[in-house]
Length: 47
Length: 406
Image (cartoon, rainbow over all chains, first blue to last red; front, side, top):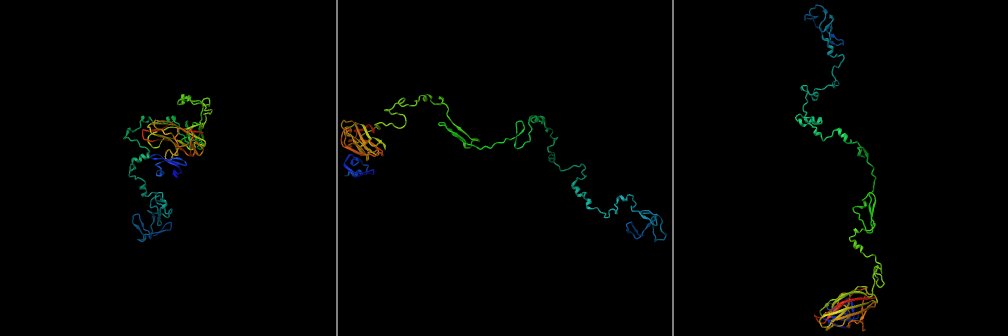
């Protein structure tokens, strides 16, 4: 589970790297773009 | 010999009698007998019993000497002196007759002028008299009498009228200051200045109105004014839209209605970037509305893969945005793509074609993607592009239209 802008998302699918600084994360609320300006970015990249 | 006067007083011890020869004739001297003959001097009658003359031989004796018989006290009383001046008083009151001309000394010329009330003519200044020419600007009493009204004797409550007579001032009625008021016309207003609340002696008002028609000369451009459209009559002077009158207020909804039409930017670089965006204001969508998106996407250079995408976010940023759609990847010489999507709002979610499967349009069948949408929140539709290599690959959303179907 990740939290973006006080909204909790449950990761439901794969994480796709779409650029050097951006990810597509499949969640219960759709595919979310996560970039390196977000705290959760490093956590997701390290997985 | 002793004598006794008629008042009984006794005088002398003896009497010496002198004869006509001047020699005394005494009774003790020789005895020649008693004298006889007439008496003389202060005596009268005849001897031997002569009388005494009390006037001392003066016939005027009684006119010079006050007889003691009439003033027994024989002195002058203070009361008798009251009408007389003392020597000192006379000296301080009168000039002595030793000043034979009778002049009064010590009087100055100033005293004289003061006593006269005017300066007496001086023969040392013979030219100082008043000439007739000097009197020219002066009025004679006769001329003044025929020229001016005499000033009458009046009272403080009277005034002199034009004919010289007196008249009493009229009674001025007491008036309470009143306010100046106004009534504005719809178009013409009046502003009262100063102190209108107490400006008048009697209450007065100003009422502005509008009469007649404004003259052409008072219009800056009469030609323009006259060329104005007459009152609109729906279907006569202005057309209707599908039978709907255009007159009146409010909005005539069309279906679909265009929310925006934007022209995006062509971008290079490998990051996922925003080419264009459209705001969906809060409370724009209601249940059962459909968002229709039609975009023309073209590539101007490069041959590696470039991908268009559509996101939605509460801010105009890709950070945290939710993917709505993905277009077909464009590579080699594929420089043009028309991308269309429909998103049906069911009141909770936007219902659209699977978001991460590339397709030019949703006129097909595939997995559905549900994206949470709160109609009370404003959202941005974000039209993004991504190149897999750097320049010259250059992709952009061109004319992109967003419409809403009821």
